[in-house]
Every structure is written in C-alpha cells, then in structure tokens.
Length: 243
Figure 1 (cartoon, rainbow, N blue to C red):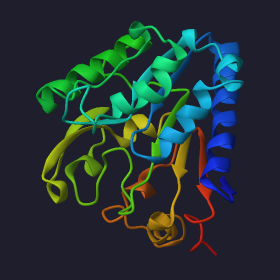
Figure 2: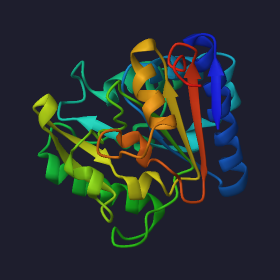
Figure 3: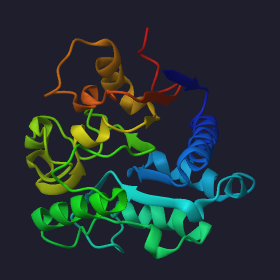
Figure 4: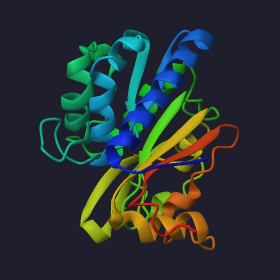
C-alpha cells in the first residue's frame, strides 16, 4: 500500500503512528515486539518522532527486541554507523536496555559478523539457523537513489541469496563490504515498511514501483512479503514521478 504525504515531516509522523500500532498489536498478540531498524538519513526523522512525547509513552519499548537490517563495516561510534544513528535518535532517548538491542558488529570481520548475527536472530526466536526464517513483526527499510535497500545493492551477490538470513555483501561500487539481511528473512516478516523521501529518489522509486521487473538494477523490487503487509511511506517529492 502506498501512503503519500506532502512533506517529509508528515511522512515521519504518520509512519511513527504505524510503528506504534504494529508494536502494540504484536504485544497484544505475542507479548513482545521484534523489529528491525533501517539506517540512512530518512529513518532518523521517524526515530525522533518515536522517541519524543507523546508517542514514546504509547508503546512499551521495554518489551521490544531491536535488530538492524544492515550495517556498514565500521565501529559503533563511527559517524557512518547505522547503530550510532539509531542509538542517538531512538535507543538512548527511550532508555532501552542494551540487552534488548542486537547490533551488527560492523567492526568485526564481515563474514564472521554475519554468521554471528544469524545466530542472534535464531536465539531470539528459539530456532536454528537451518530452520525456515523467523517472522519479524516489523522490518523498516529505506531506499537509495540507486534503488538499493538495506545493503542489497544493484548487481551484488546478496541479491541471489536464497537460504542465508544475513550475509556479508561486497559492494564494489562503494569499494566496501556491508552486512545485510537478505530477501528470505525480510520477506518472511509480518510487515515491511519502506520510508522514502526526497526528489533524488523519485526516478528510482518510479522504476521500482512502475517499471518492468529488473531486480539486478533495482533491488527494492525484491521486497515482497510472502504472507505479510508491505507499506510504502513517501513524501510528495519522492512520489513526483509516479503516475
């Protein structure tokens, strides 16, 4: 479902309401809220809404398990760290227990960090990493102006992954390696929410949503929850090329 708003601030406010609703539904039905956070610039505005009154008091975050959809290969205090951004905008303001926050260890060897993160996910759901992927209650995603999401970049090996939940993904176009959740895990979530803002995303967004299938060029096209809900929260600038 597409939700389009005039400004990025309106997008953040409505997306925050949707996160709170998803969290409270999960708490009522299963007693906890398992969420994966997105990195990048757009989610920061959402996190600030969630951590500020009145929304901060409308969800019992002490019963949440916080994961991350991807991470750069940097330490937790690096300015480029997705964890650091989320910590500053959401986790610290909410006063969350570190035991509830499961960060990807970007400072470690990426292959090792990816394997260890799969084990953390499996332990949270009391399953084995060889089992079917677990069901996150909510996975938040952004989208780059090249159509990537999480750290699933165009023409990278992780796009072909069909069994692993988390992998180290070499990204030659940025001369780096990232740690990322994969399609099998993301697409098994109960709800996936994209946050896309800004005119620089408009062309890629139109290709993702209205163009022909081309997963290699536009990895966001690969997000299609098998039994869950997919929502796109857009500002008018990002949606400007949608018919």
